[in-house]
Image (cartoon, rainbow over all chains, first blue to last red; front, side, top):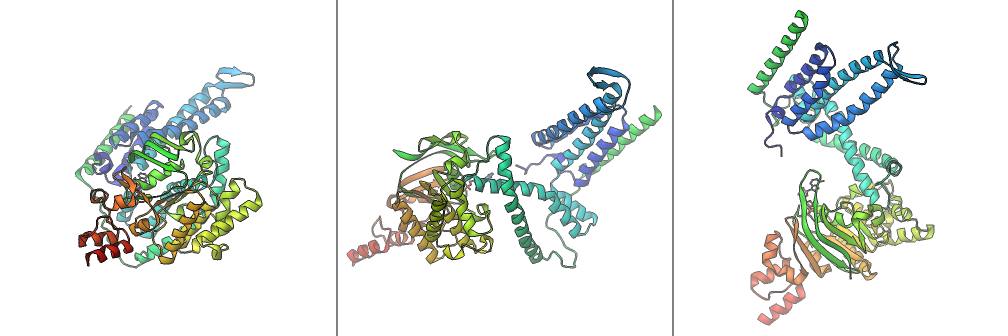
Length: 249
Length: 268
Ligand SMILES: Nc1ncnc2c1ncn2[C@@H]1O[C@H](COP(=O)(O)OP(=O)(O)OP(=O)(O)O)[C@@H](O)[C@H]1O
Ligand SMILES: [Mg+2]
C-alpha cells in the first residue's frame, strides 16, 4: 500500500516537523480565532494528500471534540465576567468566558491538529532515523523509539490477551461495565508479558551489537529531496509574510 | 446433521485484506478432520471464524444451531475450543495449573468437576510434571501442550488444534496422535491444522485442502494425496511413501509402508 507513497509523506521528517511548527506559529501570529480553527481543516486536507485522511480525521475529531466541549462549558460558566448572555438559576454564561473559551480552544485545536498530523504522516522509524542523523546517541533515540511504540504495542498485547480470555469463557463484548470488568484481568498478564519481553529485547539488542562503541551505519536511508528544500523555503517565506503583515498592520 | 457449518463464509481483515473467500465446510459430530495448505492460505482465519473470534464479513457460520453472529466468543467457547497457533498468544497465567483451570472455572463447573477436568486434560497432554511451573519457562513444544490441556479441560464438543505438530519431536507427535484419538473416541469433533503430511496420513481420514483463500479439495486422504493437480495447486507434496510409489511407477493409491510392501511383492 505504501509503495507509492504520496509526495507529502515522502518528505524528510524534519521538513514535516517544520510544517507542524509553522502551522502552530501561524495560529499565534494571526489574530482572532478563525484561522486557528481553520488549522484543523487545513491539516485534514494535508492528511488527505498523505493518504491518511480517515485515520487523521477520526483521531483528531474524537480527541479534540471532548476537550473543546469541556473547556467551553467550564469557561463560559465559571470565567469571571459581567456581561451575562444567558442565565439559569445561579448559573450564567458570560461573554468574557465565551471569548476566552474561543481563544483557548482555537489555539488548542491548532496546535493539537498540527502535532497529530505530524505523528500521523511520519513513521516513528523515520523520525528516529532522522534524529540519529542529527547526531543524537542511539541510546537516546532507542528510548524515544520504545516510548513511542509502547502504547500501540500495549494495545496490541491487550487485544491478544482479550482474545485468549474470550476463548476461555470471559465476556468482553457488550456494555461498558462488561468491557471494564474484562479489562482488569488483562492487566497482570500485560505487565508480566512486557517484563518478560524486555529480557528478550536486551538479548536481541546485544546480539546486534547495540552497545558496541563504534559508529554504526544503517541500510535504511532517508533522502532529502529538492521538495524538502522547496517546502522549507516556502514555509519560511509564508511565515515572513505573515509577520510583516502583522507588524505593518 | 452436521454440527458445524460454514456457508460461503468470507473474511476481510480491518486493513481490507481478504484472507478467506467464500469457504464452505461442514463437520459432523465426532469427526476428525485435517486442514492443510501452505502459509497464508487462510487456515487460521477460517478456524477463528469457527469460534466467533472473527465474525464472517459475508456468509454464515453455524454451530449446533447457533449462528456465530448472534453469540459472543465467550458463549461459543462452551461448544468450540480453539488452541491458538502461537501458544504465547494464549497463555496468561504464571503457573500451568491455573492456566488449565481457568476455562472450566469460568464455565462455572463445580469445584470437583473442575479438578477432575484439569487432571484429565493434564494427563492427556502430558503436562502433569509441570503443573506448578511457570509456563513461560517451559520450552515452546511443552507450552503448546499446556495450551492444548487448557482447552481440553473445557470439555467442548469441538476442539480445534492450530498447528500442534510444529516443532514437536517423535514422542510428542505420538502423544498428540494418542490425544486426538482419545478425544475422538469420546465423541468430540477434532479439527487439526498441520503442515505434516505424514501426520495426516497416520491420523486422519478426511482432509480439507486450502489454497489461496479457498477450499480447493475436501475428500478422503487417499483421494487427496493422489490428486497431483490439487497438491500442486496447494503447493503440497505427497507423503514420502506415496511419492516413492509414484516415482517407482507402482500403484496409484499407496499411502503407507505396508501397502508399499504389498505392491512391491506383486512386482517381484
Ligand atoms: N490481523 C491481520 N491483519 C491483516 N492481515 C492478516 C492478519 N492476520 C493474517 N493476515 C493475513 O491473512 C492471510 C491468511 O492468514 P492465516 O493466518 O489465516 O493463514 P494460515 O493459512 O493460517 O497460514 P500459516 O500456515 O502461516 O499459519 C495471510 O496472508 C496473512 O498475512
Ligand atoms: Mg495459521
